Length: 420
Image (cartoon, rainbow, N blue to C red):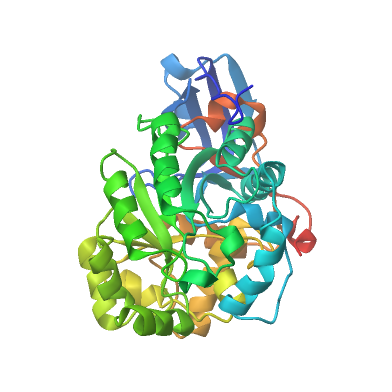
């Protein structure tokens, strides 16, 4: 078997999910539908509406599931993760970013391909059980026999829609970077492997389950030449996006000033990363000019509130960013700086953190954020169930709009107490 496993065949059977207590479509026209139904043909959702209005064409299916007393929402999208960190939780809990990294590099440099496979599978299961059906991943460390195929195999086996990024560190301590030399790679090899992975795995088709991205780790452990070269490669292929960490905390800003004699906004212009095919993790410390720059360029941000709090990085001004037209998504970040990978909790954390920062109610993060927060607070009786249909019925896991199931049963929020 290939180290990356094999892509699941596109399903051909039909599926009717009906009698849904509430279907939150997050579509302004459709709204919330009671006693709802969804008809899936192969990997495409063909029809959504009330169970009493099912067209004759969709009244029967190869398989029918009844979900009374359930609330369905669209599958959530995780915009930033380091899945390999699932095996190194709760380290250096009192440290800020750079000291935390210095502690974690030790165990990370001993990881193997088997560790990446296991940690990725664990991370994906945590995400799926908290309502996430599509995730990016930033694997930037490749010691021993590690390769990106190890995480791709995990995604294919679980049936998760996956956007892995070929990360990299090329500037170790001997070259002025922050990472140990043993965790870094030569840039010629990095670029060659980026091209190889795009050629082998990037699927730009409409219902793709696997798309590649390129992600040099951060300005403090890669050269500007690598940033420029990665951007050039990505833009030679349709749908290959660019990702990195930026402006995570004040130390990050100071490093940029001391090393490049500029702030992050000028840095991304120099390396050609000021385009709408780029999204950055964190951006807690942008100034007003950079906020405007991000909005005008169409640059996105992955907001990771739990990690930012854990590492004392700061509070990203999400309310301000949204009001200025910046695209913002939610990321759980690596489990070593979050200690969990719970997508619904991360959405809730984002809303609460903006309240603490005095940034007002978190209204415009997205319709999905609003819906999730609404269901979290509308009743203390809510408990979370993984949408097992996602795994048990492969056709729905391949659908355009996968759904997470929330069950109204039992006191408390099942699973929350089990998080570290």
